[in-house]
Length: 337
Image (cartoon, rainbow, N blue to C red; front, side):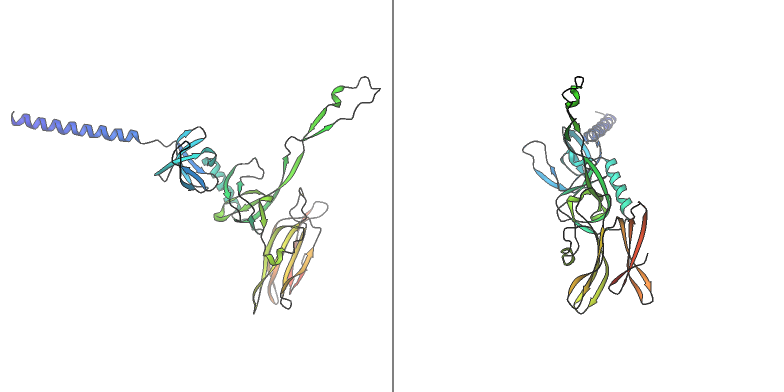
C-alpha cells in the first residue's frame, strides 16, 4: 500500500469517527426529555413519589409555592422536575397553573400595605382562598397554630345544599278548578351567611379564610375578659414600664356571635394596667356600634408629649359613614371627634 493510500485511509477513519460522534451526540440530545410547562405546588407538605403504582415511595415533601417543571402527564398524576434535577410524581390536585400562582402574587402585593387588625392563630389546617367563598381557587396551606394577621372581613352568602321544602297553601274543598300543581312541594333556596377574613401569613402570603378556621390571639391576661363576645381586632396602644417589667395597654373590638352581621364589630374596650392591684382593668367600653375595618392606632401630640390614640370607622343609623377619634389622658379615654 502506498504512502498516499495509507494517508487517505487514516483521513477516512477520522471522518467516520467524527460522523459517529456527531450521530451519538444527536441521539443523546434527542433523548433529553421535553419540558411540557411550568407549574407551582399547591398546598403544603405535598408528597413527591418516585414512581406510579402501589409500590411507590415518598422521596420528598414539597412546600406550597415551589416551582416545578412538568415532564409528563398521566390520569390524575403529573411527573415533575425540581431545579432541573430531581424528578418525581405528584397528584394533579397539588399543582396550580402559572396564571393561578400570579393571581395569588397579585393578591399578596395588594395586601402588603394593609394595616393589621390583630394577630390570630389557625385553629386547624386550612387552605388560603383567592377570594372569599368556598368555590374560589386555593393555593397555600396553613397548619394548626400558624400565626396570621387579620386584614379585612367580608360576608358571603353560601347556598345551603338541597335547600328547604315549602308547600303552597292547600286549595279549599269547594274549589273545583284548583290547580293540583299548587299543592306540590316547592324547592326554596336557603342562603346561609358566612364570615370570611383576608389574612396575611408568614412571608407575605395572603388569602381568604372562613372565620371558623382562626382565633384572634390577644394575651391571655385580657383574652379571659371576652365573655361570650367574639374578638375581631386587637392592638397594643401603649407600653407602661415599672420595676416589675413592661405592661402593654390594649384596645380590642368585639362582636356578638351571630352570623350574618353586615359589619365588622359592635363594641370596643380599652384595658390598662393597674400597678396597685397588679392586674388589667377596663378603662373604657363603648357598645352598640356599627364599626368597620380598618381601626387605626397612632399617637397625638399634647403639651405633655405624645399620647396613645386610635380612630374608628363607624356608621350611623342612616347609613352615613364617619370617623371617630379617641386619645388617652392618663388612663382615661377621651373622645376627640
